[in-house]
Image (tube, rainbow, N blue to C red; front, side, top):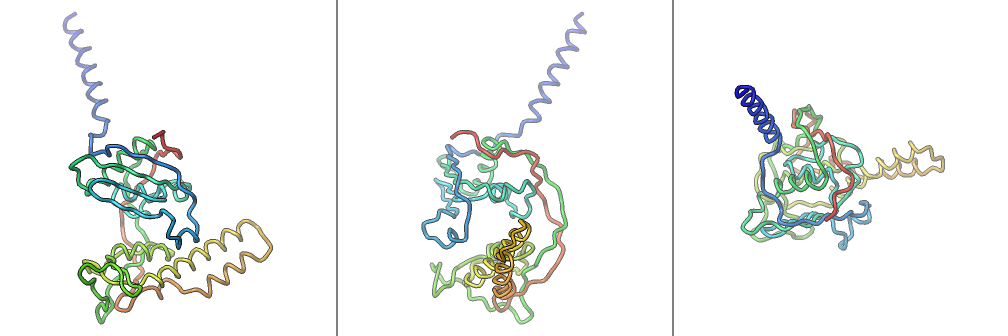
Amino acid sequence: MNRLFFLKAAVLLLAAAGGFGQTAPAGPTFEVATIKPAPPLTLAMIGSRSAHISTNIDNAIADFGGMSLTDLVARAYRVKSYQVSGPDWMNTARFDVLAKLPEGASKDAVPEMLQALLVDRFRLELHRDSKEFSVYAMVVAKHGSKLPAKATDMKMSNGLVAMTMDNFAVLLSNAADRPVVDRTGLTGDYMLSLQAVTRAGLTRELAKSAQRVAASGRTDGLAAALAEQAESGPDLFSAVPPGLKLEPRKLPMTLLVIDHLEKTPTAN
C-alpha cells in the first residue's frame, strides 16, 4: 500500500513539474500599457505631420504609434518585418501602444517587454524556422562610399537626415520587390536624402494598387492609369546614393511563424 501511495505521489509530482516546465520563464514586463486601434495607413497620412506614425522610446515610456501587428512582432523579437510569416491581416491591423517601463528599467529591454505584452494581450504563439530569402544586399561600390558622416549633434540639414545603414536598408525595402539588407559594413550615422526613397516607395505603392484594382475586375481604366503612373515614377535603384549599390542575393534567415494571434487585444 505504501509503495503504491508513493508511486502515485511521484507521478503527480512529475506531472506538475512537466506543467511548470511548459510555462515560459518570467521576463521583463511593462508596468502598465494601453493598446488602441489605429486608423488604416494611407499615403496622405505618411506625409502628414499630425499623423501618429512613429516609435519613441526612453527609459520611462515606450510609444509605438500606428504600427501593424507584423511590425510589432518583428520589433519584439528583434527581426525585420519580412521575417514574420502570418495571416495577411497582420499587415493592416494597426495599433497605438503606449507603455510605462518599470522604474530603473533599461530601454534595451523593451523588445522583451513587448514580447510579454503581445503574449498576454494578443495571445501570441509562434515558432522559429529558417528560410532562404531573395534579397538585395546593399554594399559599398567599387570606388568607395561617398556618404557624408553625421556632424556632431546634427539630425537634419538641407533636406538630409542622419540615419544608420541598417535603418536606410529598411526604408529601401518598402520601395523594393524584395527585402534590402545592409552589407556595407558602415557603422554610425550618415546624412541621407529620403526624398528619392519616398518617391520610389510611392511608385511601388502605385504598382501594387494597380495590381489590386486589376484583380478586382474593374473596367473603368483605373488600373491602367495607376500602372502608367507607376511606370513613369522613379525606381528603387535611383534611390540608392552614389557610392552604394544593390546586389541580388539569396540569404538564409530566421523566420518567425505565427501559430496563433488574436485580432483584438484583451481590454486595457
